[in-house]
Image (cartoon, rainbow, N blue to C red; front, top):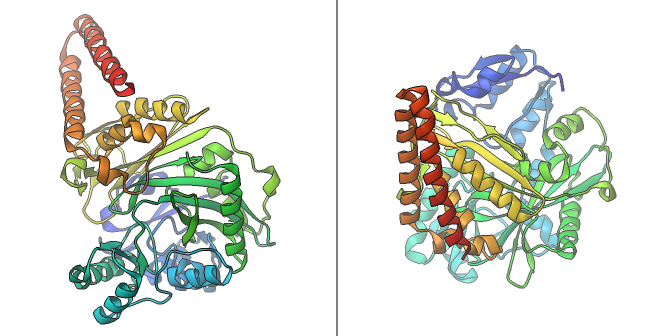
Length: 476
């Protein structure tokens, strides 16, 4: 768009990719979120001193904080997101549930106010019935989320949830929701301008999760037909219109086995998984965010929204699938993302970078497009097999295992899929193959050109046969 950018960075992020790619960089103090990215005063002061016109808040941290949006606007800058009033109404999960109730949009049973005391929580949980879910009132992304199966777990879970929520969002309020055990997690992408025009861009399937955090997303959902898509889309539009919403947003639902949907929450920001919607609709959501914040009306109507093909996203995180997805830190000794047609990679790292303990372990997102779901899946398998990461563990083996799973390929899964299908032995075998391949490649580099060519040919023939055999076995 020809817009110059200024990147804010903490000490830990001083040499990170987003700083290198920006036109300018501006330092924040400290390493932890509380010392840097959650400091509203530092962020706004940096923006003013660097001569910025607007602030894009990204995915997390202050992106759903109404006080921050107000502070940005009061400083004379534009906030690339919804107005503070809309964030306050919908970004706060408990307030959003009240509005959904008023609009007769079905909601999951739970509290309409944040809870803090153990006794209060125990009384509410007893009425709703275990298992319950503790959730952050001020943000999403699975931060602070805890499943509580009985009264004995409640006090510790509440304390842990409040602590994690405070660290992630600077706000420790949590609320209680009935835990539905086998739902699909479906979300609707919306766009709204300042003139009151609001549209929805279809759904995203987000049921492949571990620890209540999304790992893979796709659109369209295997279970959503046109009737359900329209019904959920209209409910999402009705909800955001009721608070004068402007900019991009996502309305999340749970869908049960009878295709009955329940309102879950609104993310008043850009979603990590927004690229799948972009590939299927051809609409650049970040561009739309910037244009709307600059006073432009939407350039298309609901009838003009078209969707083509199928897209899947895999989140590549520095986590060890064999060790309950425990975060992995270190220096990226090798980091070679995939390329090719119908493959998009959004990455925050490159070879030589350090993955630290301070922030979310997401390193990259791989997105593939196909004319149908099976093409998108096979394209993703090829892309992930090409993605080389050494120095830290990653979720690539996990994603490859999911893509080969027959339940997943048939579209027969829900939010309990990972717990039911997780097989560490499969991930270990995949990791070993990748390590062996990397070691062989290193040896070949040292060989002579003629020997190298012959060795590579022999190696590829052997690997191709092995993979063909494995793929045939997985199909049967």
